[in-house]
Image (tube, rainbow, N blue to C red; front, side, top):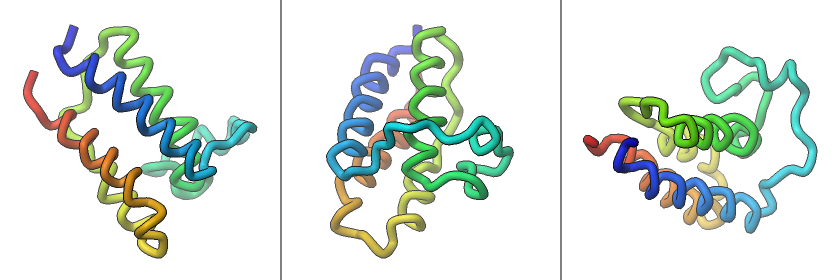
Length: 109
């Protein structure tokens, strides 16, 4: 097991909590077609917060649960900075959490 898994698992919960607190958590899943996008972050079919909820969090949880290799790098903060450029105060905590996630991913085992 990768030594980063426990911290990452906790961090995923913090990201989920922040999405819920901001009202960016959806009760209804996007369509299968929307989730099947091949574009980075599903930019053509999902809002960024939908991508976090329905693609990113489930994929990362699966990686941890199945003891799969982690990505070599994460640039998720850069995307969040572009998406939330007009909501700096509202997105501050989420961007901090995503920056910490990027840092955890980039650390060696």
